[in-house]
Amino acid sequence: MIQDMGCDSRTVPAGHPAVPSNRRAKMIGYGLLIALVIAVATVATLTIRPCVARLLRQVQQMNQSHSNPFRKSHRPVEEHTWVGSTETALRKMFGPPKRVVSGYEAVGPKDRPKPPGPYRTLIYEHPDGFLFVWLNDPGNGFVCFDSLWFNRDVKF
Image (cartoon, rainbow, N blue to C red):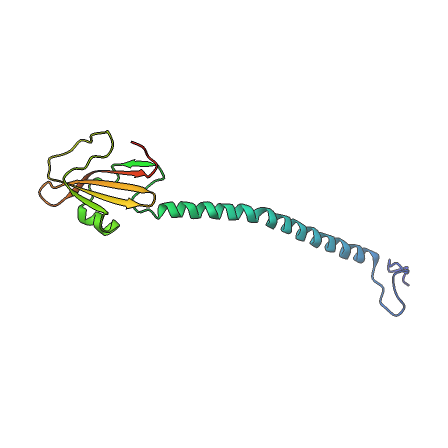
């Protein structure tokens, strides 16, 4: 009877039901397939985890540099970013400047074009660099006519 079911009589203990050979082969195949899936998942996890960690570090670094409210890009020098902003709006965004100069304070060798005065220069300092905001009063409050952000390592 065991022979008729396609079972291997050498592996069936007495008193136990016989398991067909092709069923056993399928079970072994499924076991090997599960082992292969686990191995691939382990390799993928060990390979992908460092890549994901590296990407997360890069995103964190980008977020840290974007935590600088004075700049809108990663360039070492940004010009004209805050043109048209009022002094009140700038102070609300950035808080009080490190220094306020009554008049125009130049930066570097380049003389910047100026509209009619009076002038005021707001100087903000950040661990990454400096922001100079030049304001003039056309009659209705001080408004930015030019601005310059530069990293600390920029040489003029």
